[in-house]
Length: 137
Image 1 (tube, one colour):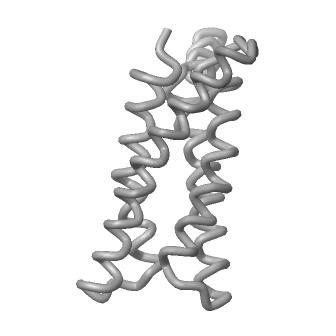
Image 2 (cartoon, rainbow, N blue to C red; image 1 turned 180 degrees about the horizontal axis):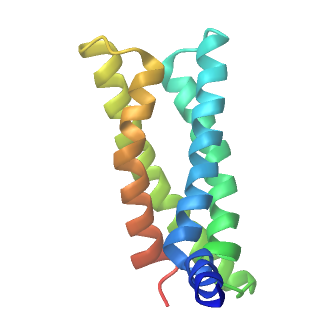
């Protein structure tokens, strides 16, 4: 029983598991806000922009503090780190928006289904950017 507890503790503390949890919440925020804006009658571009802003703000702090355990809050470091993070997320936002637009406007996929499809690619890309560029040790 002790070995099982140790294994569970090790898994729960592992960076990949933490990213999965933080990414799950980030994705829920993104999809939830996107869906709300679609239901309110906004187009896919506006809906995706607002949902991305909300999700990225949450993701930055969740990744910095909890996932990658970056404790440097010095202003110069924060400016560089946050700029790199937001730039990476801007790039994936553009890709996400382009994919959603193509799925909805050119292939006639439901806007919410389109968002779900694109999130698979975006989650992987965001993890790579965060781990290898923004929060590298």
